[in-house]
Length: 293
Image (cartoon, rainbow, N blue to C red; front, side, top):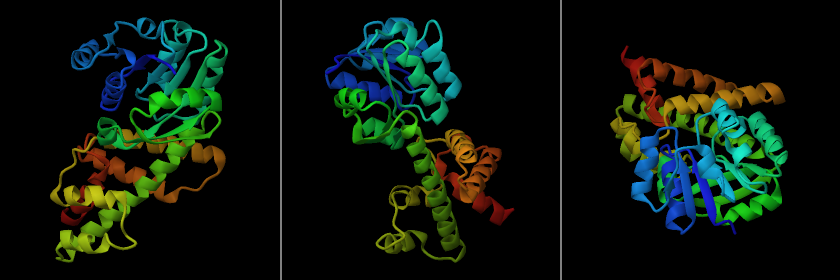
């Protein structure tokens, strides 16, 4: 089992995920683009704050990353001062970023040239799931590398599955985001209708959540949607990035995603309202604005 671990990227997800590894007793080295965040993490947890990626990954048996998007991944993995060039041969590289399947396949090939293994391992569960160690992790890559990485990943996972070869984890995350987009829009319309019909919307949810309409979104977001609270971690800007990845992949594989494309445009409307950093349940605000405009 890997004992020396590096974690690159200490955002709202990576910060607590790296913390779970330190709490579990792993020898953790961390690096973040903003040095103050790296130092803050090291004051909170037992671990080593590093001033460069090369320093963080130099002796790591397993390297984990959680950054922004495809260009960030290519930079931190493939540059001369990046992960692949500076991590040891035989290291297992695991990326938790939601990115394209194409970049996952590319990085898998790049890592293999240095006798390293790469797993694309996007997560679902949001900031709350990261903080509570209850993320769902969907992986693509080599089965042997997945088996070796499992004990580390289970420090913050409630569900962990290998979905297929490189890129399969990212494609599974796309399925997740497609499903969520439609669910949130449906819930937004339902709650908005209840409000417009002068019903007690909270009481309506209490009733219908016991039947076929029940969902995680209804259970966890309906009350805050009704009260206009949209500070639950996963921002509209991030969702639009994810949906653009889904729509691009659909253009490649021929899938028809009319609802996803429509909801993506609805999120564009939310951004125009100033809701870039609101969480994804804020779709209901768009409907309220349309009604009162």
